[in-house]
Length: 118
Length: 110
Image 1: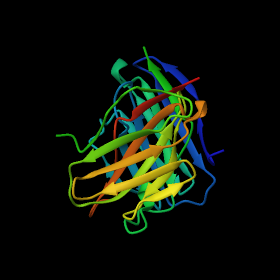
Image 2 (image 1 turned 90 degrees about the vertical axis):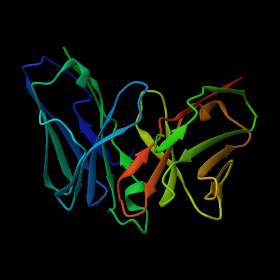
Image 3 (image 1 turned 90 degrees about the horizontal axis):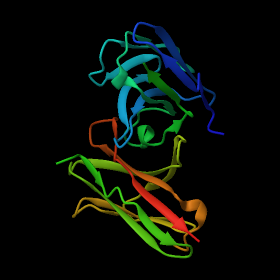
């Protein structure tokens, strides 16, 4: 087990719905990430949080809204999504963002939420 | 040129074969390198870090060639369970943002 859990595992929503994805890590890490993985594309980094503070927003549309209430929990709030937003959304954590120790390169991923937008 | 490039494959090899993948990176200031493995419909998992001097973990050997800006992963004595997609990850100097390659698919058949 990776120590990172995500719920729900599958989600189908209409374009007018509002839903939230939840991620929890039990590893005592300080950094958390949201990624989008579409078929035939590399993992796309969406957001990075370090000690609950957002340090990176990779030009993500505002219909995706992250929330990090503490170092163990990360949410992704979804509203008025488009069909092209259908993908696997992965959460990950790492000990830190220390470049020297490669902290951000040593990530533990959750199982992902497979999202379908109708 | 993409920041991190991998041959998508698939590499189709018999059990027991030796197979190698390369991953090229464009930023010469890249600092840290990793290989991840992703099984079908599963999340990526860290396989190994890549050190400047090269490193080995059982049947797996990772090497870095800074002059030519690529890293490699060698798998010896392939097992059926090695079938997966292997992702290259690069951290560039001055940035903590990891860049993932598209991945190389490996299929090991009996």
